[in-house]
Each structure stands twice: as C-alpha cells, then as structure tokens.
Length: 213
View (cartoon, rainbow, N blue to C red):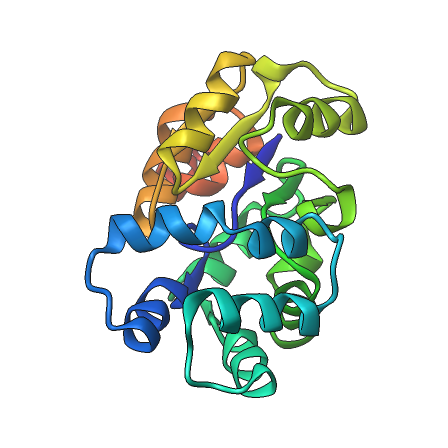
C-alpha cells in the first residue's frame, strides 16, 4: 500500500512563506524548527487544544500584530490546494493499490482538505495526528498505521517531504522516500512499485501498450 504525507507532497502548503511575511524572519530553517517545536503547534496537531487557544498562544509567543481571530483566519488558508497533477495521479492509482495519508495536521486544516479538495476521498485510510493524539516522527504513529492496515512494514511505501519523517519510517522497515511535488512522487512510485503490479502498470501506460494489455 501507499501512505502519503499531504502538505509539500500532494498539496501546496504556504505556511512557511506566510510565517516569514508575518514575522519578518527570512531564515526558513530557523522558522521551520521554531514552528515545529512550538508547544501550541504540538498541542493543536495532537488534538489537545482548540483553534482559538492555539491562535492565542501563537500570537502571544511570536509577537504577531494580528488579532487571534485574524491569525486563525489566515492560518486556515495555509493549505493552498493540490499541486497541479495531484488529483489526476491519485485518480490513476485509485483501485489499483490501497492508499492512505499519514499526516501531521489539525482540525482546521483537515476540515479544509475534506471540504474543498477531492484527494482525501480516494484514500482507504486516513491517519492524522490531531485524531490520533500522536505525531510524526514518533514511531508509535507509524506502528499504529501498520497495525490498522494489517500488513507488514516492508509492504508499505511512504512518501513525505520531511527527511526526519522518512528516516523514522525507514528505521521501522517501511519503504520510505523523501518527495516534494507530483513529479517526485510519480518518480518515486515508479521506482518502488513492481512493473507488473496494477499500480505499476497504471503509472507506466506505455508498458501496457507495448505488452498489448
């Protein structure tokens, strides 16, 4: 089966650029590290606080000039929709191999994914941090997905834009690759999935034409 991260893999996520605009900080790595380490981000994405409490904490700790309501409204729009070709790729794979998402997210962004875009509807499983109370790269989140699917780690292909998350998955025996955007996702799947599998043939239509199938 395939497990996808969402933001940065199938979906365009503008959070880092918006943080830079809001804070005036131009060091992407520093911004990313500070954001991930924030106790409010950790709480919201583990489902232990609501959106207003999260926004209140971020506005205060980061010294933002926005009101809490303004920040939460802005934050809601950080998922900016599927990358071009994402929906088509998932449609191509649908029915050829079990698929799911394994994502650190929150109730606000997850609602937007479900209401505005069609990708989530193609998944057989959805493993999202705010519902599970655990986050990548915690091994337990991967273990939960393996148990829920009822397979073994080596039967799972996992694609994520975070090197740390990919390394955590590999330590458990999952076939994980770091990808950003649809082209890298497609290339990774072509390299990881057997040519003669249903998904492999769906990704390589030229092979089907050559074989006459």
